[in-house]
Length: 427
Image (cartoon, rainbow, N blue to C red; front, side, top):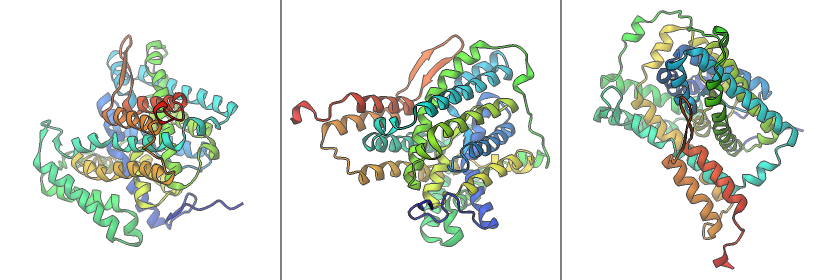
């Protein structure tokens, strides 16, 4: 039976755009994820080129395991920054690699469990009254990051009016491209917005080309193997493996967003066990080459929501470009010169459209917030997630942290399961 197409899709899940259009759409995804994917290794002390390489390889592996049925891009995960930084300082990359490997193993174990018990339980713990606020919260929780990028000079850590104007002009340009351009140009408003913002940033003197000039055309990433040391670091496993449960909850949220914008049920096809196994295998692959743990990216989901292009060919193209660029020193260096002001300006739109997808779930399912139960579920999800009310548990060398997004998701699930259908005062 032929699969139903997504409403309003320009290129649906299995549509392959003509090659020139495919390249342009893939570059749009590449630019959208690049800043965050590179930032993680820079904060931890890993090689950015390896992180780009592992994000591309991880995405391709994810596509292979899910049989090309879900458009998800894998990028460096922020959830593991604290333990990876600590392990890097204390023991070096071999410890980090073992921690990243253990994260992947946890994903595979959970995937195995899901394959045995099925995924029917998802509908019970994730009804629309829970899913809508969670999807909104995922988008809005990134708002502070966008606002910081769009106002604060990372070099001086102070408010900078030039950065504000570049971010604002980037946002306006992205909106205009999205509203007034047709055909191919109408499909790449984010890429065009980034290019426009980059031009303005150059005019305002926010771009430094010295790194580009110094970079070689061909530069082999500084690969570092999991097997670089024969010593076992149990603290790495203890500190990083439990955090996989945090990112798994975020994974569920991302799949729910993709379900909404594409009109499909990826929990059923290819199956949650496959999507989890894809994430886990991507992290294991990263540990073998010297990269950080990876996870699916909300930035790329936002691009799909805006462009109405859900093609796995486009995601695969972005992954191939990431792998190629990790070896092209000058191009990699050029992309790294894109200032935070531009990323922040685009982020205002990308993160907002994710939040709007959550709002659409609420509207479509006619969730009535005059009923106390619905209100008591949505309110803490939104405030805990957006405010990043997190739980930090001290460990031997680091801290086990449940982010606001993860904590809000867990609390929303529990409230939905334990609260009565009707409040006592409403009977």
